[in-house]
Image (cartoon, rainbow, N blue to C red; front, side, top):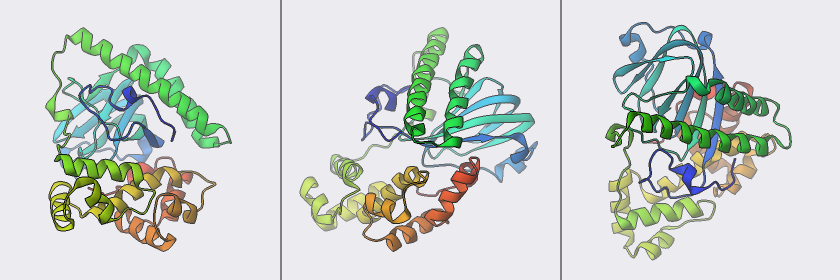
Length: 307
């Protein structure tokens, strides 16, 4: 799952999107059942549960029916549907009748399709997708020595077949343009984009302001002012946010200690990692790890505000 994938996988549904990195990470996968999601029959009740993530989500409806409240509108879903949610898009699942689904949390993928309702029907290929996803869930649950490699293989197969499904549907609809509502890619100035790319590639190292000024040819004061204006964060704070986002994958590994993860992602001390992680998520790394390992639905109930 931490291996490099073909670039095509990182921008499927969106030919114009060029990510800073050429790898996709499956942050988490969970199987959510109706009894975990209270029935929200009124929009007012559902709105109280609206949330968003810094990562993308793919929901596959495995049984029952319900609705998704997305950006203020409701969309009905039935067994065999996919629901595609981009980062920072507010949403909540509404159970109508025994709604169950499998959810994948992905980074750094964004979806862009002409489907204006976020829903991708897949009833004709339902069993095919269900088998792949259930195999992935099984490997997550047993997590043996070779599970990670198997999950990655299933993951690649899943993404390629989902891409094929989207192309087939778009051809059937003779779609010509993509919906702007599903593409909120922000445009940064060349200097800040260069700095962000450098951070993405070198976050495991001790990145300093001097490093960033050297590659951007900006003064420290100008860099800090421009970086904060465009990203909302000072450069060093942004670096640690990137490190925390990368830590989520490693926290799912049972054989990596917190200290090892802290060192691997570039924090100078375990204490600094724990402190910053808790500031962003409300959990210590150990608490977050236990939630994920012991309860695969936990990711849906932990909102990480790193916006």
